[in-house]
Length: 120
Image (tube, rainbow, N blue to C red; front, side, top):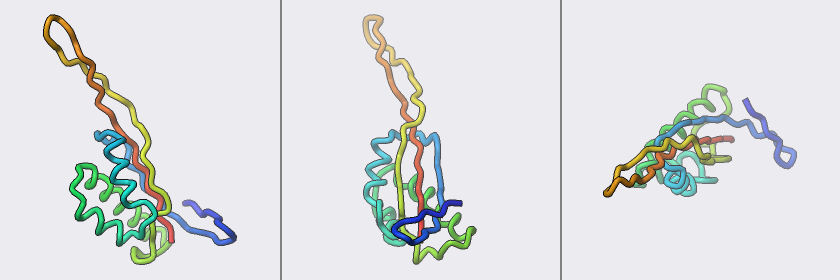
């Protein structure tokens, strides 16, 4: 889908997006920062041992990006690396938490959009 030209070379890339993830963007960014710029195999091994909640979501999206690259005949998983990974803010669901003496606290249930681009 996307061929990017970087310093005279054409990089073929595959994209995977996961939208409306019910995890705060701050928590997903922590995991995304750990694998940014790494090879796919190295990123998978990092995600295997990471114990954060967002790890499973990032792992699933990374597998989808690798699968897209294989389907597009761009490269094999051994030669792929993570070209870009970023987390955007999704819509925020606002809820009310009743408190004492008739007060109410606002609760923000944040969502994220995760995008992973892999290339050879």
